[in-house]
Length: 393
Ligand SMILES: Nc1nc2c(ncn2[C@@H]2O[C@H](COP(=O)(O)OP(=O)(O)OP(=O)(O)O)[C@@H](O)[C@H]2O)c(=O)[nH]1
Ligand SMILES: [Mg+2]
Image 1 (cartoon, rainbow, N blue to C red):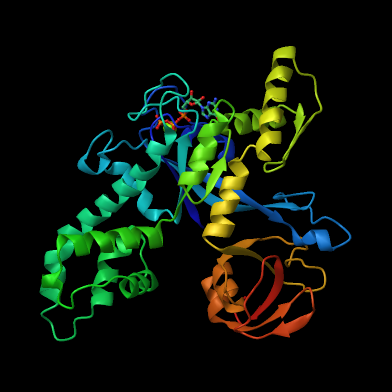
Image 2 (cartoon, helix red, strand yellow):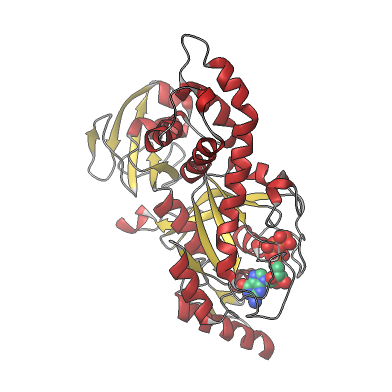
């Protein structure tokens, strides 16, 4: 499963975002380091369900009227303060926890109500733009220290006649989530001395930074948009490439109201309906959230997840079925599963994603929309419904 981590300063709202996005109960508090051990749970990205192209909705638990929710893993880690790579705050532990993440949502308190150390201060008194760079810096330095620690071994390996720098670096960096392809791409981008013993600290730092960019893309969640001066959000947007204004707190309130049966809302919608009895203060609170949503096109929580998975990680959703006419599995469930795959994936990749046995026994695939066979190297597209014919059962 794809894994997305929430990272950022203490008190930025990571656990609130996590709770809203997973509906798991975790501790939230207006003080730094509320979270100590990482929380790991299931959240979803939202996409258009292929059942919208048929007469009837599929009825899958993860489909609400054609809004399809596809599972991903979400990770909520302890807050990060400058100097973490040297053990400040809770130190390196959660940097290590970020290793399995495919991408990072950097949660920033856009209201400027949290200082550098994560302590609450008056709204507007801290400049959130100053928080942007340090996560990357901390991660780069932490990775550089791993490279540094292992360099002796690379130098030793380089004395062997069949030394291959790609292989050695891949072996060293698999632990931080780098694949052979990541290493190859990075080595193509950076200029480096042929012999490992000639590498300087700077060479190693550059390698670490490039590996980080390749393996841990980061986008910014400008949280607490409900109380943030608008100017702060504009400046964050000028300073970082992808910034999603959000109110994690607002999303959490909505999801709780849905659970209580008083609000009709699907995560990612840009508005909601009040359908049950609410007290006056509750109604005021909900109307306040509605205003924030109108300004930013929703609470931003679902959008942040969708953006990082579909736009930054370039994933598509494909739906394996057994019956290409009814789009069902063997038990008659319509569109039973949705799989996220990197853009460019083929039917065979989908087969492996379903099960390695299905992949190994792959014979051919049928596009269930067109009802025709497709070649093994066809690139799948978002929303494809595919029957896989395999010798494995
Ligand atoms: N106004 C407002 N407050 C929020 C929002 N999201 C979170 N908060 C508040 O910010 C404070 C910190 O929230 P947490 O979710 O515990 O923050 P965290 O980033 O997990 O903090 P640590 O675990 O200490 O690193 C709490 O008082 C939340 O209620 C939001 O969207 N708007
Ligand atoms: Mg927390």
